Image (cartoon, rainbow over all chains, first blue to last red; front, side, top):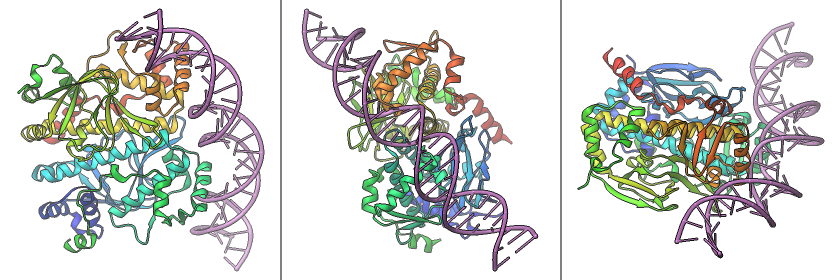
Length: 257
Length: 257
DNA sequence: CGCAATATTGACCATCATCAATTGGCGTGG
DNA sequence: CCACGCCAATTGATGATGGTCAATATTGCG
């Protein structure tokens, strides 16, 4: 049986969890010993479908995914974006039925962890149980923040805020370099996430560029003026609860593994 | 030291939890033995404030509360409504800092449970730990549904959807009789929850009444046509995951296999 | 009875959606 | 190598949902 330890991306989950909780050496080891099933997906494929009753959770290794729900008329609301290191359907551990779907936005590979294995793990390591619980709570906090955006922020702010959030989340898994990160989503997808039309996303994006806040080409976002971007989005990172460890040192963590 | 068992509303929490999970006799008893601190609040008071680092969770006994966040310009976004039986800040068990506030919408009384007592309880009763975790996950599912509403549903649908949700949630704690329930919120508060202006809430409300779907006087909502209301809100109750007993059976079955 | 909060109504306006057309990038097959 | 096709990005024009402002009723309550 294959385990997480056999993968080149094995450190992603550890980084992610350590961005929100503190892990012991034993816990790190136990995580890496998790048996996995690898699966690859093409753009647009569903990893988990609305209505499913999963018996496994899915750890993203490469690519980019989103959770979404379709309206009866076919329109789509995207509820979250997910980077490598995320376990977007961790909730399925305790909510039997999926009330939304998870799909790959670009070619994506994922490691599937059996619920039974996770239950076993969290029984042996209560610290991991709390880390996972905490992860689902941060998830909820992000939903709340998106609600605020859609309810009370206008398009320009909303987009700026999303970019700030993604910047920090990518940073937490070591995927930001030189103030840029890979954000491989179409403007239509951004619209579905922010509750805006594609056309409007395009126009607002142009303003962000005109104002010298960002650059966004070929799926790569470069933040030119972090201060101004935060201000434009009224961004306060508290809700991300990325305070698992005060000072993160990814190099050190990577070296240990 | 006072315990939950000494209160007339002691069964609210049990009802609530049993609407989403299955409790054993021992677990029910242990819940009722929780030491509590009682506090009463007037309309508009904060039970928990943005930025707090709580060491206790708050179980609503009477009244009605909401979680909200203020924008820099003073506008407000309400992120959830809470009925007696809810523990709206259960998340504070694992997220140190409050990223929003909790306030009383009408005179409200609450029983505060120390984090340490809850931790103790969940250590002795893993079933309760899972029930609490599940509760926070249902919370998240409701946030997602509200996001969908604000992103993709227009005002009329949005309001109808909210009423459907509240109906089922009140039902779960035994607070619906004769297709009516107490919804003591102003139109301004509904607006802050749905991302609408007070004026628009008023107009949409009138349409719901004109169409014979509901009545809403003196804080009491009467649902005149449940079918039509669900249809108007495109309401699908799956996301409330009010299938605690069913679900637990599946889990137990799964565990046995 | 009278104040204050809430609900209601009307007029006007802004953000953003919709529709439609054009451009540009890129891979594929001839 | 180029034409074709497809998808994403872009632009323009028009309109609708819902916001804002302001005034007036209504209700609750001390």
